[in-house]
Every structure is written in C-alpha cells, then in structure tokens.
Length: 272
Ligand code: CA
Picture 1: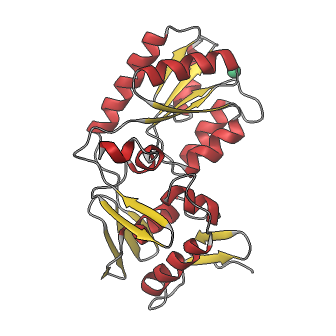
Picture 2 (picture 1 turned 90 degrees about the horizontal axis):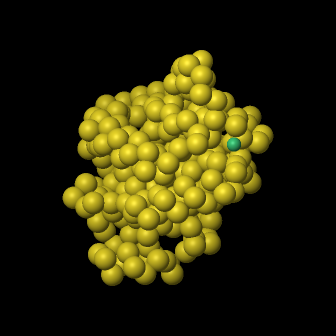
Picture 3 (picture 1 turned 135 degrees about the vertical axis):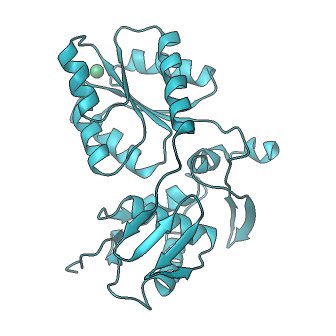
C-alpha cells in the first residue's frame, strides 16, 4: 500500500478517504483503477483552504501540510464552491472577506446544497454579531484573525475528532431510489440493486448533488485521480450501465443527460 501511495496515487486516496471501505485494483483500457475504503487505515485529512490573502494562505497551507494534512488553496468564494462540490473534503477553512462571493454566502450555499463538510470560519471582525452570523450560516467553529497557527491546528484537530465521532452519513434518497453509503446498499422501489464499486461511487456522487449538473470531467475527477483521466467516454459507459440497472426497469427516469454538458440526477425531466 505505501508503495502505491508513494507513486502518485495520493490524490486518489485523498478523494476516497472519507467514503470507501474496500480495496480493489484493476486495469481497464489503459488505466489502472483503484478502489479503496479506508476505515482500517489512518488516512490523511484533505482540507480546502479558502483565503484570498496570499501570505496568510501560504502560511496556513504550510502549517497544515507540516502537520500531515493535505491542503488545497483557493482564493475566491466562487472557486471555493466549485471545489467543495466537486471533491469530498474533510474540512473547509473559510475566510469571511473574500472576492466575488463572501465566506458567509459560501457557507450558506454549501449547506443549502446539502454539503455538510465541517467549516472553520476565519474572521477579522471580532464582534459577537459576526460570530453568530457565521454560526447561523452553517459554520462549525470560527477563529478570529490574527491567529497563531497552533491555535488553528488545535481547532482543526477538534473538528476532525467531532467528524470521526459523528454517525455515518445517512441514506441518500431520490423518489423511490435509496443509497446507503455505510452499507453500500442500493434499492429502488424496495428492490435490491447490485452495483460494482465504480457505478456505486458515481451514483452516490450524483445523489449528493441532486439537481446539479455534473460534467463528465467532474465525474471523472471524482472517481479517478486528476491526472490519469482523459477519456470522457468512459464516464458515458458507466452511466449507461447505471441507467440499465437503476432507471430502465423503473419510472420515473432519474438520470438525465444534458447534451454536450454532462449528467444530472433529479425527478424533474429536462427540456432537452
Ligand atoms: Ca480576506
């Protein structure tokens, strides 16, 4: 395992760290595919850092990485939303004052989009009102600037503990389709549907983003790693298989194609 990790598969492992439970390795076309789940392994936490001041961002990123976390840095609220919905982060560190979309709005949009990744909010404004507003927006904790990296790391550890102790994510449902991330069980209209790991992951990803359009690239990056993927038609093949099992025998159809764009799972039919 450690040999694999040292050969550039770390991104993939981070992506799956919070979600999977088995390890399987197989070749398909020219790609090596790996499926993991990691309850038995002590896995690296992946953190999204949203801070527009380059010096603070670099300082915090270095502190996180020196403590063994994997940190992706983005600098605008818009990027924060794109990245947070595309990748399964374990924690988001979110500045309030950001260009384009401010941190409070980012947090509200995450929660409205059913993204429950813990948020540690950074604020320069140390008033009771701002703290309350942050927590009301869905943040889990906040830290007032300027802060020492030691204090930030302590908050990160506390949030990580809370996440690990929290119950497993609940069943995802859409119409009569149900997917249980904890047991890897999928049913539709009460009938058990057997899905291979990749198809399960894609369906889970679609359901976690119900109503949102997911591009082939987003799906590919979510399921494989960032670099090794270049055949978007592989996503189409997996979606076709999924449809055959999850949609074809049932009504209404849930997985919709947006021609030239990607896929969306929803009860509503697209005008397309
Ligand atoms: Ca700022």
